[in-house]
Length: 493
Image (cartoon, rainbow, N blue to C red; front, side):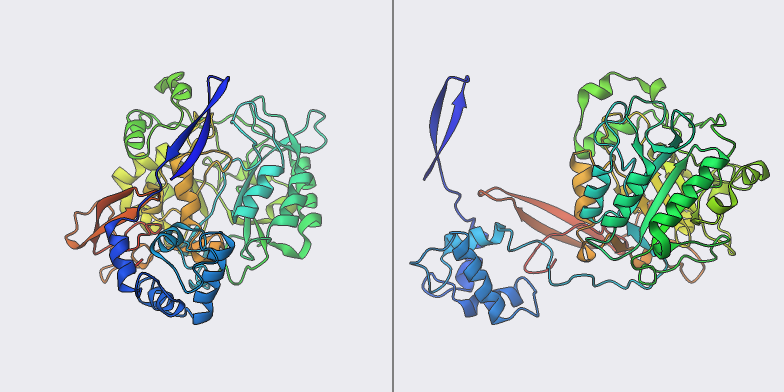
């Protein structure tokens, strides 16, 4: 028994006795298999790590270190020097020193494939400290994102009020600006604190030609030799390994300064929220209730069809254009044209979460074929004023590498994003499964909508601490399963 106090009505406190959690039967049986007379010795803990946890490289020293940590955490006391008793073993299973991912694995995936072969930890409007309409712009959330391992930083760049310098802000809103140079210097200082793999800066550009030239000078002087650039479109993306400690700029050759644009997404919004809410729970009810479907327009990402527009090319400062390593743009035509694979060059395409929702219904396989060589970036719909996020799985299962999230947000979707990129040593790059990368013998690609035969049904018991647990079945098809699904069943992860 333990006691906890709670303040009641701001006046007085009440104390409640809380029952200590009892180990479930499965945990008791496991403990009995690896203990003698109610005590799990260091040797038995070592066997447990190898046989159950599948930590094949675990040593006796590792088991000793666990015991010492449990003593330091007061889970074991001076009367339990010989080993773990059941209660200590149960607490160890939920302790931070027993993480769901083996920390010794580190970066264990092949990092020599092209960038398009990886899911990349991607931020959206990375400079915002809060909501999309009135929060401050700052370099602080950029630094925080980089310290989490985020590898793609988005900056919206605009002229200042005097039209003689460049600021970062969310255009058309009440957000307060921050100087571009401050953001660039913070990126340089913190880019490789957590991961040595490349950082991509995506620019949403609203500049005049002279300010593009000034931006190019800022970027060049700030990053120097760290900058990776190309005089023309790449024929294939380099690998993360070859780009260690390098910074890449991704944007499109922009149109004339602040030229009006329209994004037509007729019918993309209706009915999309219900499925999302059912799967992940409602994140912010009061904000969503305030706006109806007709207000559900995108935020105007600077990524519309001008990639081959000669007028656009003429209105781009040449020194700015030379900095662009990953060219972006939708090109001419409709979705089929945007997804056309060019064997002579690679590029980045951006779609909103709504555009993706429509596209996967009619062009699912084309999206997967496109993402085998090119990069697809997905960004939140425009009415997420509260900086909430969306279900990332639809994008991941169609090969989208840059699933852009509001890192200053909250909610289950963001937890999934953070969990996904705990993988591969937290380096910000997770290798896509082969089924999304390779074509079949007849050049066919994986169809996420195909009704495949069940290969294995895995029953999983997830223990959530304090004695609660949940049983569910995970059906495994002979195809792609979500990459951040981790569960421990008889030692297999």
